[in-house]
Length: 204
Figure (cartoon, rainbow, N blue to C red):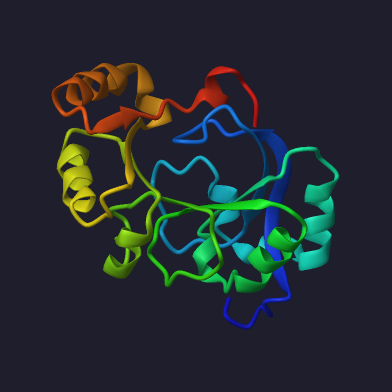
């Protein structure tokens, strides 16, 4: 994937919706979902994003123009794993167009881009680079089973003191796991619940 020039990126999809997760939950945002992922979460809900070769390569200007067609000025770059690519040019262009830039990443590849908000969601399938953890504005840990609480605590100790901490029940098991997450947060109130609002209200 390194042969893809940073004037363009493989894009699985772009859409205007509400952010359903974490600190910015409920805000209107333009989502830019880059294709390509080397993390491979078994419960991933966008596995179609993994193979970058299946998706069109769009220029930065095409991406920005598409975002500008909507009134919100919050752009969320997600994936796949967006940090497989050098995102400096993309964020420079988005900021020049007046956007706040947010990223959703596993943190498993080197950081690039100029971000107003970094949502780092560490995955057991490919752990984050330790140098990325202090850069997180929020740490969002998907809870699939009880061992994920220990995983969450381990990574929380490596973030900065202002980092927001979220536990998010894995969607396919949310009915089963959410009560456990709620009880854990009640006992460990530094954590907050991220409940994937967008899936409950059935928006992208």
